[in-house]
Image 1: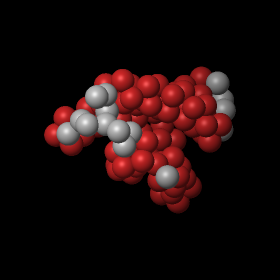
Image 2: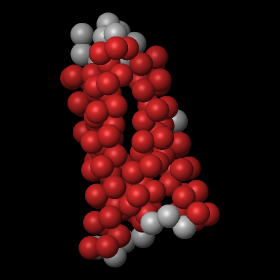
Image 3: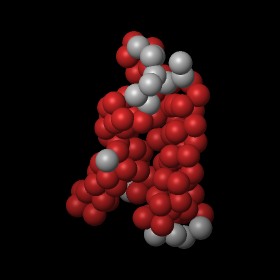
Length: 111
């Protein structure tokens, strides 16, 4: 669901509003992060005993870093490699999702 939110915001901003791909990717990632916290907290890491007071700031720090990395990857894909922004975003999604999942598992929601 978080990825769906991310891509919906990205597509809306780029195709309907005219925002450049990299900033739209960052905003999409941040919007997706809001959904991701709720999903991760209630579905993925249900065995976590981390309090919201501890887990939420950690999650948002990782989400902000992931959004920045995501935007940089999309920018590089579009401007350096000449890719369509959705191709760059697809690669960024795989890389950033893998990284942020590992960080959230080992730090945000660690027991």
